[in-house]
Length: 312
Image (cartoon, rainbow, N blue to C red; front, side, top):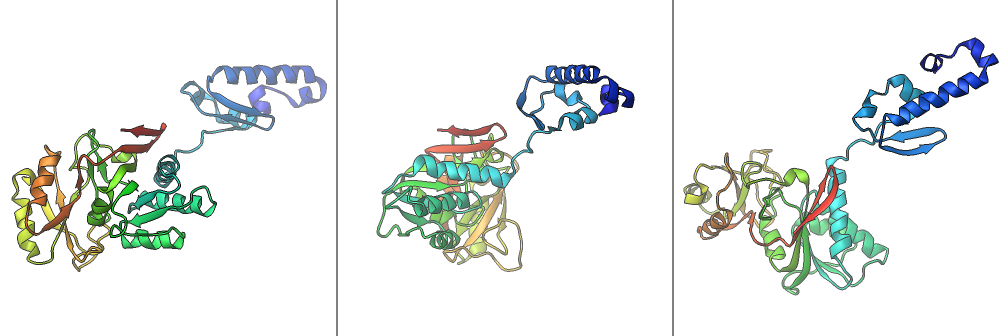
């Protein structure tokens, strides 16, 4: 501190006016170098850096107790933000709610449980889209029903693996694509929650497209899918190990909650016509359903470095 201000030991004892002037001048210079000083407290100056203030030396920051800006939010923190916002903004008391599956949907289910527990929401029933979501909801005390008794939902909330500019989605990385689509197609509103890494210019290259197929003659079905005109150039891979991950993590064929297999379609180029591919896949005998969710999205809540945005 003495070195930074140019103060000698003698001056400390004999010239307090000089010291005060030097401190004031140094502080004024420091503030002048930044247009984004967020707050000042006697013991601490918290600064969100502009480009200019990056030139402040370590000695200056130490002297004034300056802290760097808060670190960027983690991906889990971004997921929590959109998960909580989706429930806060779209779920009202008395609704039937579809509960998605996956690491982002987890936080929406968590938030719904919180608001039911504290009484903010009442008279809610929910339909889970997987066994693991069902287990989470039960642990949180969320009343559950099924499509057999409630074929019409007010809102469904779920994540996505990819979102294109037309709000078409790739879903099913977690293996729950059939139940997700069955529930979410019945909702008046389908709210998709993602962080900005899931946005893309075209579906396909960024995340494999899962297709759920019957175990019977699955190799035949896999070859049939790969030969479809809309799937030309894809690499069709049978999912192995856990059905909740498209990473090969076992020697046994992955089995979904419905007792089926999953083929992951890997594309090197963007899918040219997602709705046409969706139709061709659905019309293929042996295919149960696929992870293209086209024309279903009401809104996408996006968490990014600049905050939360909503696209409709």
